[in-house]
Length: 73
Image 1: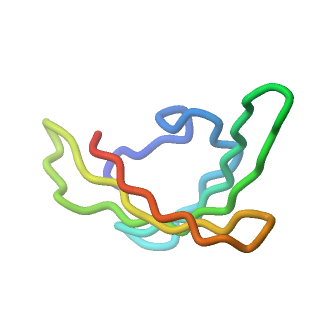
Image 2 (image 1 turned 90 degrees about the vertical axis):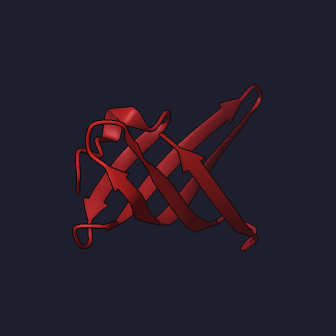
């Protein structure tokens, strides 16, 4: 997966490769006193191995809310 590592995503508890550009992750976010766990289906795009890539995905909150995300690394 083009260098994507669990430690590169704060709060990442699990990172599973689905394909060379797709992954599933479990992310835990804490904002005292609240702690939330999200499952994310992500995709890597704009791959430039020496400079970065774009991570995009969609997660589901425990309340079944869709949470779109886009991060440029």
